[in-house]
Image 1 (cartoon, rainbow, N blue to C red):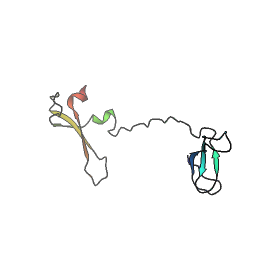
Image 2: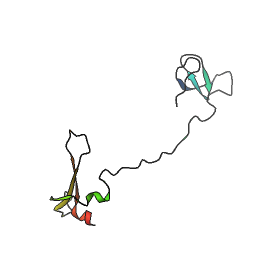
Image 3: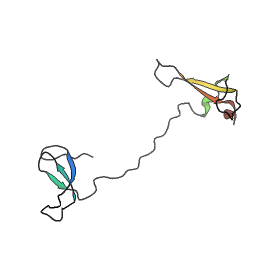
Image 4: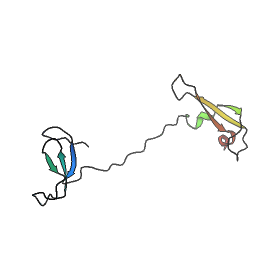
Length: 114
């Protein structure tokens, strides 16, 4: 939240009252102060509140569980050393602008069946 000076409309900053202030109740306390004019106001309560934000739901860009039902398969070696897969399903999706190439997504044969 930004606060502005009611006298000159400049941005208020946060500072402290001097330790030698005439009013002993204000000494060392925080204040909003204008750096252009002499306006100042003590901060007597919290000027913020904490809000919890909801997590955004993630869209499934692949089309959900049924998207892999009717896709093509190709012979390809799985890049993981522990996997002996030699076939994978693939689909191409245009996820960027039309002047860029499509993105190819692969799924190993066993991970679709299981």
